[in-house]
Length: 600
Image 1: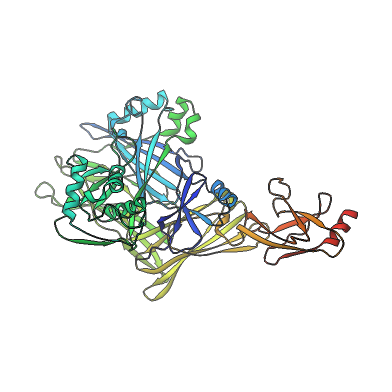
Image 2: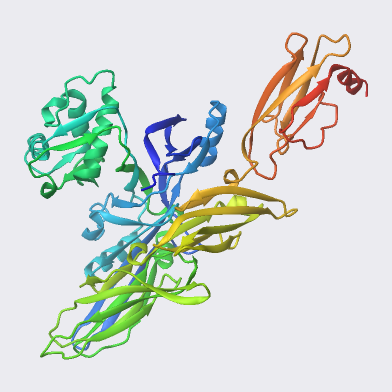
């Protein structure tokens, strides 16, 4: 398995009270975790949505709702890049992709919200910077939430736990131990259960590692105890335990839930120098209202609530609402659908019920009416299918067969027989350029590719990539709207990707060598120099002085656009700025020219 582009937990880079992690096997590239989540609206739609479905079933009125919430991650890339540059850290920063996570709302009881919203809610990654959740509320829960909307929700906040896999911390040490002994030590430390606070277990690894049955000595040569603790904890999370959010009644943190079935008695050897993927949880604050916080309660209700009346059904009918949590723009997919099947149940029902729901880009749920026997409970099987164009021919890829019993079916990216690779672009950069993106690789011995364009009207897409595509990668070219100039991005391993000005050649940290030849009797001279787009910004202009003893200087700057990566200079404040120059050749000056510029 290739770990390229995964965060390397052993190589954190401090940047302005934050940490970025080296991209494994990609020197100079660092991945920055998000610093917050906030509700995010797309195309003016409300990020918070309550879809209420009501249906007359003859002998009863069925009513429920689907509460959905869209989040966007705040990576703070611009500030972090400037801070790294100011600290002399010449690195490339990119956002760190997360795989999913959980959200827990606070003040649920105080606001009299439905009890279901006080539970741990699942977050699904829709793209690199977007996450969604959906919760089904019964009739009573729906009424509670509507009432809360009418009163106002300003006090509601949330904590988020985001799941990320990176390359584990590594140290030159080998452990041989009995998993059962480790489990016994964990249970003793946790008070008898199989779940333990991750911070508590790490502290035990720091203070008394020999008590955990891992064969760790009290001291391990020259290895820092913090580094050793993280190396062991990463492997425990990868092999024996699942990181989970802390309980609601505990301080915000993470726990490790151990799998006792995987820890039978025996001998296990770990080489802590080996690379392997290990999960970690990123804990951060989330704002579940975002732009809705400024709305009056009455207007908040009108923006959030939508009502749907399903047609009346006679006894024996069941309704299944289907909703897709999928990228809206899917490159390479002609169509997608979910097929639902309820097997026959003799003697009450001798036939198999089949229904199909298209999975379109809309966020509105689709209702399937299933005719069952009058006393039958709802139980069904479902499977996705996606139609792709392959070598000019249509090909259908089916997802895994799954089972369900609830009246709401949420279809996500993991339910398909292919990979979804979201690619999104920074809206500010799309004001400068359009981006042509291509995902490419080899499939069944032949070249395979899919292409799409990102622009101001379409800032995101998702490549649909069959699982049998080998060596998949993504490359992109930005085309300036002003003059058509092109800048390329080096191919990146196929994964979630966020593109901005710093993704393309010509942006980022730039360096220039300068030299002044003293060809007259001047003892010193000076110039003013600035990035080509910074001559009007005093904070980006710099004065450089040269003397006979020090005729050479080096100057660096942060190019904020791949199309404006050059510089300009002048002898003094009254002189004219030079044309735009590029730093690929040193700037050579002569002191006699300074005198001429001053004279003129």
